[in-house]
Image (cartoon, rainbow, N blue to C red; front, side):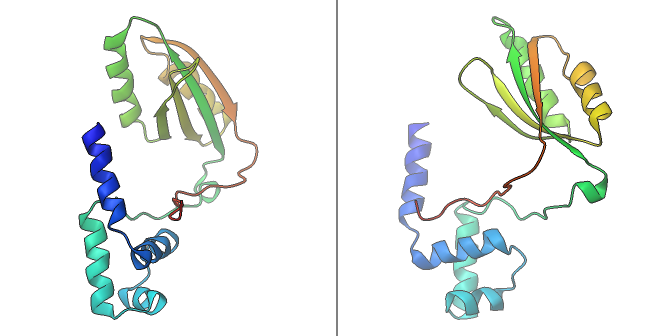
Length: 165
């Protein structure tokens, strides 16, 4: 793992202010044309395209995606679910991770420290669908405890990373 972290550090050191500005613009406006990007960062379109491709090749840009309007699509509930696994059931953790990868309603999953093992961000059409997910889908061997918190209001939601740390 140390080598991988060191490799990432080397890539970060190669970024100049223009690269960071380009990444910042792409985080906010992934559909910006090369000409729009070039005008904003004050480089020629050819230089901008070269930098953009280099950032993609370095793996700094993982993917481009559209952020959809969940309520307009009939998805009205967001919940954060804390999952605790039974101790000593390592073979069940692999099945749990497979299940997480398969389920579209799980938007994010983090393995965490502390009293719980995983935190999931889950979306559902309504509370009834969330209840079915909690009582049926997540009840697999190895899961000992599930606790959920339903989101009342979204205050901030972004995937943009701070580039000037």
